Amino acid sequence: MSIENTQIYIELYSYKQAWVDLPSEDRQRFVSVVENAIAEIEKAGVKVIGFGLNDTNTDRRAAYDFFCVYEMPSAEFARLFEQQVEASGWYNYFEQINVSGTVKSPSEILAENSHLSQ
Image (cartoon, one colour):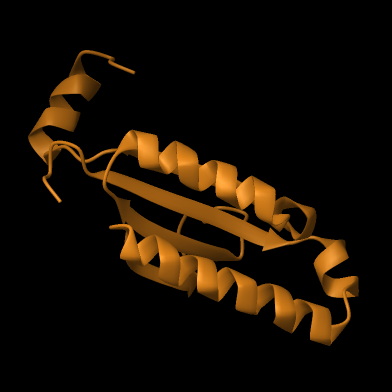
């Protein structure tokens, strides 16, 4: 994957009450489907950097309990990924926000900050 097209994609999410209320066997079944989907996107060139719990001691902590970080081959792939997440029913069970963008060097981004780029 070349750096000029590399996209970092971050999901921040927390449970909705619908997830808590779902019977355990249904939650396990849903998780199995998600695990299979992750295996498929890895075959398509996505690097799963990691999943984790949002540390409660984090300074200026985002109000979400979990995170997922991916390296994606392109912005177009990221948009397809978003469509797949939506189609899976994920948002019925999880409150989520996403952050994504093209990887750039620190000096490039800091220069853009100095020029108030968006």
